[in-house]
Image 1 (cartoon, rainbow, N blue to C red):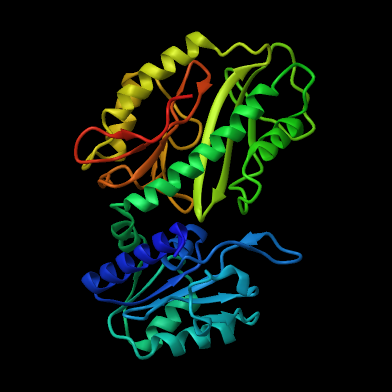
Image 2: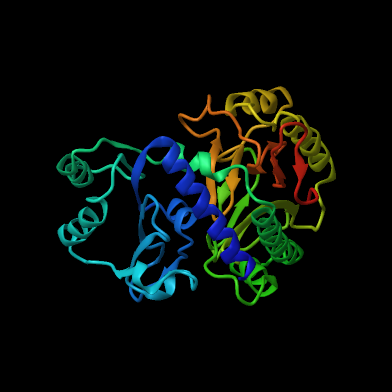
Amino acid sequence: MDPASAAAGERYRRVQAAMARRDVGALLLATPHLATFASGARRVQVAGSGAAVPWVVVVRDAAAATVFTPDPDGAPPWMPRSAVERLRWSRDRQLERIAELVAPTRGALACDVFSPAVQRLADASGRPLVDAAPLLAEAAAPRSEGEVALIVDALAAARAGLRAAVAAVAPGARVATLVSHFARAAPPVFGFPLSEGLVWRAGASFTRLDPTTVVEADDVIALEFGLYTNGHAGVVGDTVAATGDRCVAGRRAWSEALCAVAKCCRRGATAADLMVAAAAAGASCEGPLAHGLGVGIEPPLVGGRGEEGVPLAAGTVLVLAPVVERFPATPALFVTDGSPRWLEAAP
């Protein structure tokens, strides 16, 4: 079995164990990173639509998740064909089929997207409807060494593309050219990127640049790119002046703040703890100060609303993104019971 399939199988076993501990009979998942995490299903491209992860139902003690997809290519190759079903375009018919799957189960129903239709499904089954996020967070950490290795590979691939994009930053270059340099330097087969590439003009505020924007001589350009490879995500960012200057002073101040935040990244620390450490070190953030990484951008979202008191779990992969003196960049680390382990060198 290839490493990506082995990692998906290990995740599925952890999900099943968490369902048993929490007395959950079935998981109903539609959020991309959660559906991918629990089932191994990947994003597919359907004509006339964007990339999407199929709907997924995980029944307790089932050998595999049930994947509803308009394209069977979205299901992992190791999944039994009987577990792959066509996605019904009628919402009512789709919910009827999900109700058939969960009817024989016992325990609560857990879902990631609450809606009146899903609540009616739970009411009809006579079971409580609960949030799937805590269960999946419990299953996410600790990551296996195989999963971490795949994330490290994805980070390295994304970093190689980012270096090519940074090297192309120069007065007169178009943003679209920077993105194309990233794509050409990334692996030839990498699935759907996490984004089309985020490029900002850094200053007193950060201005998102569209693909036609031309880099000016006095610009300081911040870049962030992401990709998928072997079912796992890599997200990377760096900053460079249009003149090619590596912004040494800003990079040094950023590095000091980064270390202050990283010291807090250990089991039991909360998102609030990381935000306090960042502020004390003179760092701010554009978006999350840090976020989880695995099969996509995942919780925790440090700086995200409602997650201030959520403790970090050992085995979590975190991408740190402090901003100091208009200088943002990202490295990733692995949370342990003690000091964190860097998964890549600082840019």
